[in-house]
Length: 78
Image (cartoon, rainbow, N blue to C red):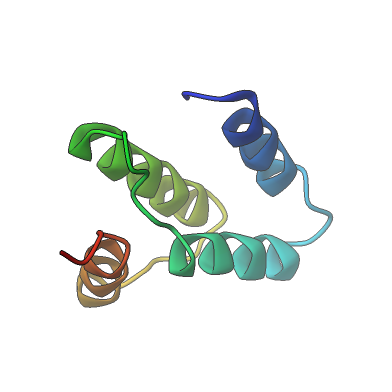
């Protein structure tokens, strides 16, 4: 984790009251993920992997195709 906000977001995701809320929260977070301007690609991929693993830990798998599209969508367009 790079920032206290990331830690907070992860803790909020872990302690949501129901799996449905957790799934919605994490999928939205994944859908909205963007690579930071000064962030290296490894850190960006690690954030995505953390979200994916949190989804898996509550029994929600995400298709590789969907994950790939979200990952590419978060990269800056140049």
